[in-house]
Length: 202
Image 1 (cartoon, helix red, strand yellow):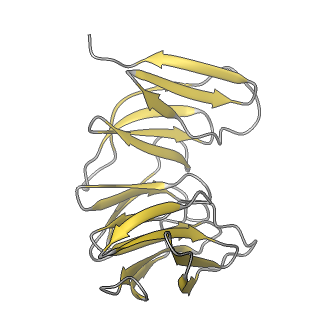
Image 2 (cartoon, rainbow, N blue to C red):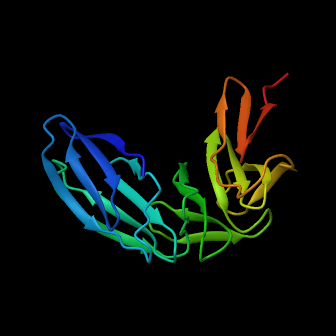
């Protein structure tokens, strides 16, 4: 997966996933700090970890799900706080918004919302396909399902609240590429096709 550099205490820590673990290294000295087991059926851990105020959330597909890790004060150790099996995104990532994790499932199909502090499942919805990619921008979730649906969704821990949606009808193959937003435009790639949508307020 793509690594993330976090700042914790006096350290900059590079956090990433290997085939069977999440690991932390001192980004300035290259010192190996810690490793926490995170195993899937096919040794695939493709999602970049999320970090907020000393806590680190990692998730993977194939039914493995996610786990919340708490870093020690100096960042040299981690301990597991909770596990959550339902939000098991294969490669569609997850986002943290106002204390809640939003993402989709792989074995546990659907679009899920999980409480960051407790791991409690807030909801699971199957409205635009059963799994896919998710990003957050300008106060909204942008969900791109594996079957080609793109939905603008309000981040609400009570319900999967779709504002609007449309279908990608160009390109071929799986709908796996992550959408990108820059300067009022939404970029979506599907196979050999790249589509650009104006989403700026007018």
